[in-house]
Length: 63
Image (cartoon, rainbow, N blue to C red; front, side, top):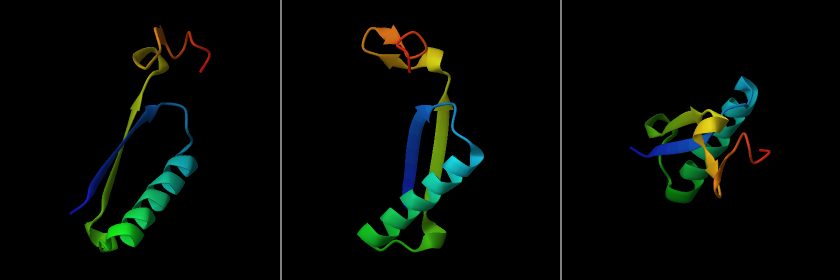
């Protein structure tokens, strides 16, 4: 059972996250032939203050 973890900064819409889940699952089905019902896609969102870019938190780095 493929389990794909996606870590990203918060701020995407539900529609964007649904599109991401679909695209990732389709890529797994195509690339390794996993059946759709066996694929799990987990999205973990982090506040920008918890995400570092270089030496700065993302919210101070202008992201």
